[in-house]
Length: 210
Ligand code: B12
Picture 1: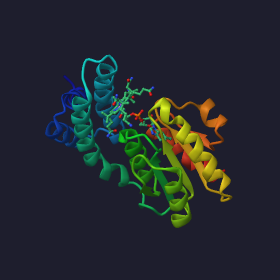
Picture 2: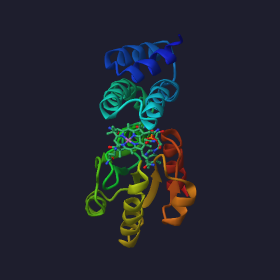
Picture 3: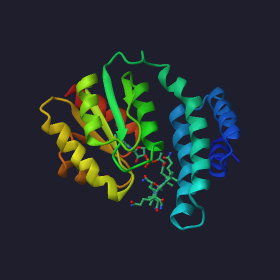
Picture 4: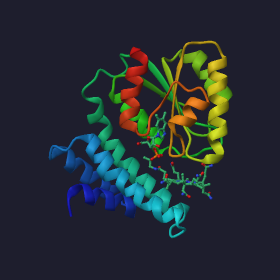
């Protein structure tokens, strides 16, 4: 079994210590942190997600896998940030929209954006539109990243985008999450959509440059 497969299996089995140890080993063997994320951590999470969808595992197993995934993310965080001076490009707010408790994807996006040199203010999960608006006023960010993982919380995303955009400022809004598409992002008036954490950082660079 390759080291990346070992990491994926350890996430799937919810073995946080193993994920941490194998992620450290992969980095010291010279693997790029993005590769460890995509081919190790996310592969393992997708595997548990498939069984969850089919009713073969339940919420506790998924939470244990999520904890193992976070153990890997903690290891990778510092190497993702090593290349850039943290926070020198300006502030980006991120949060998961109201009613939605999923945060693994949002946390990955936050890590990648930090790695690209922005200071990230993470508002957490189940964030109501009012809280986003208050945070925009407080932090004056360059951009806000909204995450939604449930079809039922896509409406909260829509409401949040229209409240932020209706508030007058020039802040750019980028959206993502498994059920979100470019078409939906266009329909709700978001400035950008990205399908994954690596492209989220690229797209934020692009929209802020343009
Ligand atoms: C983990 C998980 C959970 C965990 C969450 C733990 C946590 N701390 O996040 C727990 C067990 C709590 C959970 C609960 C529920 N879940 Co859930 N969950 C998942 C699961 C298995 C994996 C999600 C995940 O973390 N994927 C890995 C990450 C890396 O991927 P990601 O989130 O998609 O993020 C990537 C991109 O989408 C993008 N991205 C994400 N956010 C953003 C933001 C921006 C700005 C950008 C640019 C990009 C971006 O970049 C990320 C990295 O590349 C998915 C299945 C799946 N395959 O998606 C179901 C899933 C999302 N859950 C589902 C459901 C139904 C639920 C529950 C309602 C179950 C229940 N009956 O209680 C509850 C809802 C709770 C709530 N109110 O939110 C359904 C949703 C169905 C739907 N279409 O609405 C799914 C699809 C499973 C399924 N097929 O049935 N869940």
